[in-house]
Amino acid sequence: MKAKEPAVALIFLMPAAARAGAELDPLEAEYLKYSASLENMSPVDPNEILRTSMDLNGDGKPEELLSKPSLRDGKQGHKWTIYRRAAKGGKMERIGDVTVDLSCIAPAAWKKDPEVRGFYTYGPGGAGKGMLGFYAIVKGKLKELESREVRGAGAEVERLFGKFSERAVKHVAIPLEDEGAAGAPEQESGEASEGPTKAPQPK
Image: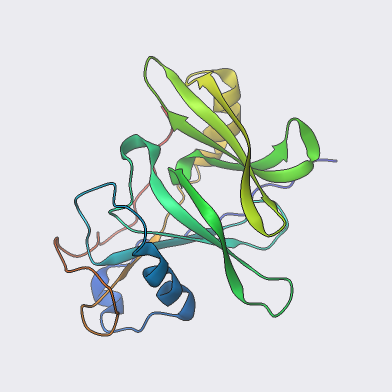
């Protein structure tokens, strides 16, 4: 059976002025509270939450991914916290975190067990090598099922991520105000970019 094309929400970067004064929705408020416990990877922390959505396991129901500018580990990408809607009650539940560049996510069936659907990730390393991982949602939680070193320019990596990264996955930057969003960091830099940004392709 032919695998479905991964569903990706292409969300344009929204300038801060567009949401100035807007209240956070319940999911963003929950993430803001949770993210206070995460260790910053970058000294730059604009007053923003980064948010996008994509179907990570091919079930036709997109997951929500949230992060912050400060939670970026260089070329490895941001630490994204993933939420999905619960089967009962419809509440959005936090299922786990993954550090990855958005262009290095490829929803697919697991090669070791095609019945298991999830997503591959790639993190570039030194000497032309990198780490390939596979994640699936198991019993309502995100679980890493595979992690191995591969050569960054190898055919496998190109096949998994080449076409997908060309989709230019975008996210929306949600500005936070010092007042009205408890725990929001102080503004250290200017407003978000005025236009859409293209996620970098894996090297």
